[in-house]
Structure formats: C-alpha cells, structure tokens
Length: 169
Image 1 (cartoon, rainbow, N blue to C red):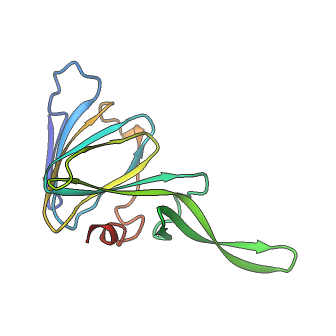
Image 2: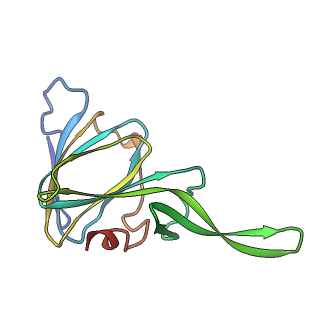
C-alpha cells in the first residue's frame, strides 16, 4: 500500500495489494477548497463512493472541438461546456468571434446527504472538490492498477476557479 499526506488531504492507494482483483481500491480525504483532478483515463474506469462529507464531482465529456491547450477559456451553460474562438472570414477579411461547444458537463454531489456511487468511464475528464466547506473522504475502485501512461492530467484550475463554486452553494 502507498500513502501520501500533504496540505490537500491524504490518500492511501492500492489498499489491498495482495488481492487477486485486477484493479485497486483507494481511499482519499480532501480538505475544503482543494480540487483533485482534472484528469481522464484511456483504459481505466473509476467507481466512486463517498464515505464522509459530500464530494462535488465534475464530469466533462469532451467532443472533437475540445482543445487541451486552452485552459481557463471555458464557461458552462445549460449542461454544456463552451469556449470562445475566433475565425477569419477570407471573403471580407474580418475576424469573427464565435462560441464553440466543446463537450457536456455534469455536476454530482455524492455523500452524507446524497448516498450513491458514481461510475466514471474512460475518456471522461473528472475532478473532485469537497462541498459545503467540509472535508470529504471517498473510497474508489479502479479497474486497472495505477499506470501514469493511462492518464492525462490537467491543472486543477483548467476549467477556471468557479467550476465548483457555482453548483455547490
């Protein structure tokens, strides 16, 4: 078992290393105001259950318009994630600002007041932050052992600092 403790919280990873399961079970406690993620997996599916507190989990299902080189240029509206882009009109020589839908976004609050589990499939970008100003602890099963080559990490503020605030108040 591996563990890590810092100012963001603590994590224990592969807590049953000698079991015969293909994946691993992890436990993570996150302090208020901290964002864990954003990242996505090529192969791994995550199964999440919050055992204390409430975790605000954001899922982004990107489409072909999503660009990983455009941090903090997104906004959310009606369950979709958007970014402003500029196109050049060759006919009249003008640039035009347009809005481009880059994927669908979901907010889930799972924990003490909304008990349930969440399945996060490969290709879906996900991040976590405790809701309501309290720490939150989750246990999660991953279908694969940890492999850094299976995951693409984004900065915690990749989608802007307000992505968790709007839906957790």
